[in-house]
Length: 224
Image (cartoon, rainbow, N blue to C red):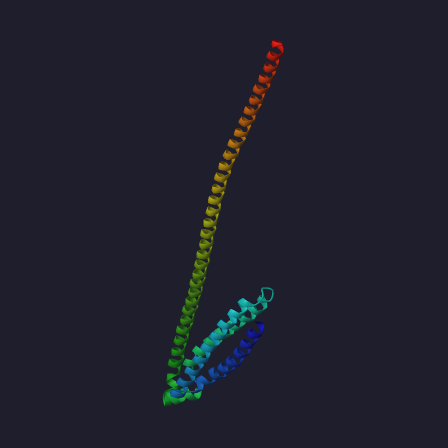
C-alpha cells in the first residue's frame, strides 16, 4: 500500500511543478492564449485533486502504526494544493506590465489606479469565494461523516436485531427443553410409583401365601 502512495506522490510532484510554472506564465498572456492555458491548468488541478483522493484512500489502508506519518504528508499536500488554487485564481486576473500596457495603450498611466482598484476588488471577491468553497467542503465532509455514521448505526441496529432473534430462539429452545424435562420427570415419577406399588403387592401376596402355608400346616398337625 505504501508503494502505491509513493507512486501517487511522484505524480503529484510532477503535476504540481508543471502547474506552478504555468501559473507564473498566465499573467504574461492575454486573449485566447491565456484562456487556453487557464483551461489547461484547471484540468491539471482537477487531476491533482483526484490524486489526493486516491492518496487519502491509500492512507486508510496503511497499517495503523505507520498511518500518522502518511497522514501528515497528505495534509501538507492538501495545503500545497490549496495555495496553488489560490495563486491560480489570482493569476487569472493579474497582468504583467507589458500586457497591461498593451491592453490600456496610452491611457495606462491614468487608468493604473482603476486597474489596481479593480484588482483589489477581484482579489476580495476571490477571497470570499475561497471562504465559501472551504465552507462548502466542510459541509460536504460533515455530510459524509453523517452518512457514514448513519450507515454504521444501521449496521449496529441490524446486528442487534439479529442478536435479539438469536436470543429469542435460544429462549424458545430452553422452554421446550424445560417442558420436555418436566414431562420426562412426570413419566419417571409415575414409573417409580408403579414399581413401588408392584413391590408392595408382591410383599402382600408373599405374606398371604406364607400365612396360608403356616395355617395349612397348623391345621394339618392339629388334625393328627
